[in-house]
Image 1: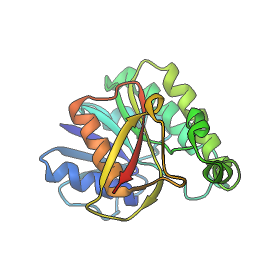
Image 2 (image 1 turned 90 degrees about the vertical axis):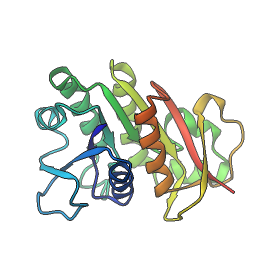
Image 3 (image 1 turned 90 degrees about the horizontal axis):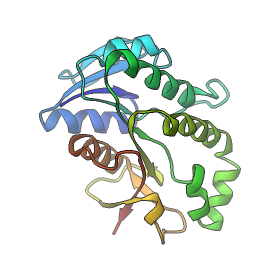
Length: 210
């Protein structure tokens, strides 16, 4: 398959790019600067991820758009995720690529009700503005005609070789007080969801297991 990746240079994005390439897929990375360091097997395209025309041009001929974008500074880019999702939705009209798999976060939207008191407190205070941006983007996504999948990982970690569980949000019953997910597992779920065409128009909670 051919994937256009947004956020390919981030710590989760690098995992996805490497996993996809190692499994024989083709990857195009849409990045801000063309001089970034990535796996040489990946094709690099520079441009603004919030511009629909840029995404459409880069996405043509691909099977899916994958987003591992994160926000480094909510003060400088308070609506980055919403603006990017809006651009991806608009790009599909001209690129013809309507499969979109994106990383969000546990605690966003309806998942907040399933969080522990401690986790909920963190989500509603320290992460409030970042989660507001993600939640706003998901309103747009769910109203679109795209074949989307939203991944909700717990707090990200750099563990390797861990197993994980992927459960549709409506089926989640119990979770750790502070759920955690390795970036490698986040990337693995994104790849399998896209390749196997699973969890279409579903929110999926992905967490490390023992």
